Image 1 (cartoon, one colour):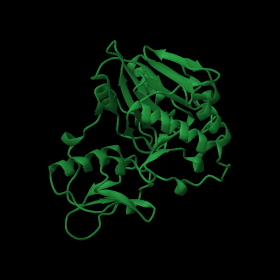
Image 2 (cartoon, rainbow, N blue to C red):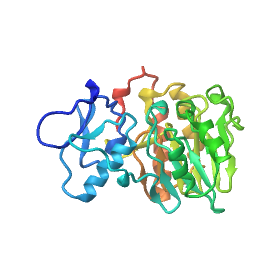
Image 3 (spheres, rainbow, N blue to C red):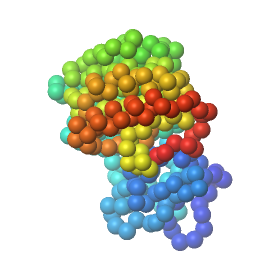
Image 4 (cartoon, rainbow, N blue to C red):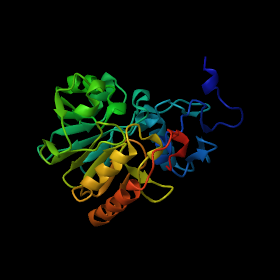
Length: 300
């Protein structure tokens, strides 16, 4: 029997989003023409017209942390689970977002040796772990901040990998194998640099791979609403002033083409344009004032 929250709406068979939706934006990233924000939650605004759009809805459904994207008369097709989903030649979106990481996106990035690094974690299961390690050996699991630490130890142990966290958020992953300290950049493994980034939390970290991929955690993201890089100042837990200082300190160091955040959209631009946008974001963020936490104020 279905729960009241997921009860099937009446009418012709169709896709819908049930009432467990937390408006996390993940589904809209994967099916932007089909799922949009309506009155503070995700809704399917039109039904799929072809097989490609059916696949988009399956991607959104298999990423949704509340499993809220459903069809009135059939179950999801496991053959249409696209994850891990290739975003570029050497980076994958893990999907299967976890309710224990506030629905954060997580990623895998390949190193020149052929080994992989996992950035933050999807929901835990042995079946999912097998999917990810089928791409190659995973040597490191790196955490961007305390909100995304769930499942880190489980994945690291399964892979035989090292688990990394910053000392500022060490209490959230006290069993980490490697601890980043201070604010100086540090190399995790070949071509993957950790940039400590206090602001969203005390121990936030931004990871840049090969001057190409920037795994930003919750420090900044691409906003479809403003068509630019943004900070989520309304959900900055530690200090918006420190976040502005982190951006100012690292704006000249960060070089990348892809921004790949935990929350918010992904974007690829020429490295020079991304550098300019980061510098502009640093200037804008230094002008912001602390404000009460308000999830509804984020400009996705």
